[in-house]
Length: 224
Image (cartoon, rainbow, N blue to C red):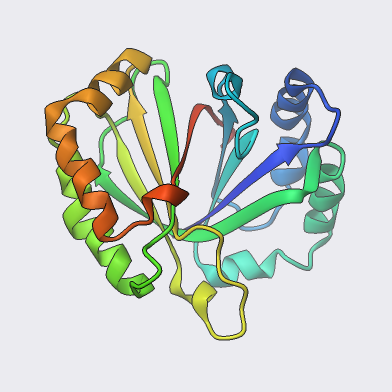
């Protein structure tokens, strides 16, 4: 199974509460008409992400598909045309991006009761590293380092599928996204400040560009 992760900003001048309401209540009516869709999750960026400046995105959508063939099969459908038309009602088309990814659970446990706090981190590999090498380090070396934290709940890496790097294609903006769940914001802060997590920070420059990392705190809503 593969996942499409789409992040976007609301239309200029649109109130954030109106954006959230429309996305959660109205837009799923269009999304759920897509053939072959297996799962759909919305991630609404939390209020605290707006304190310093406008965040990278107001929302991050996750959709799951059996394979690339199933994903491609819905592109020319009437349902997709209707979905894109509906997106124009609340999304800024110039600030919409996506990644086709493989989901790799590192700590495959349930989501905290009540949903807890979910953090999404956008990452780019070091410019001098090949995609496959960077992804292997992220999965096999970096991922297990984070498991020392008892405050970390579920932890998933989303690796960009390699077909997006073929010659002649525009390269993805990010090479992957980390998604981590905590019981609450205090648990996330404890994890981030723990001495054990220093090894995680020290490992990042070995395969990532730390200056390109972007983190969002989000509230997760499962649509299907």
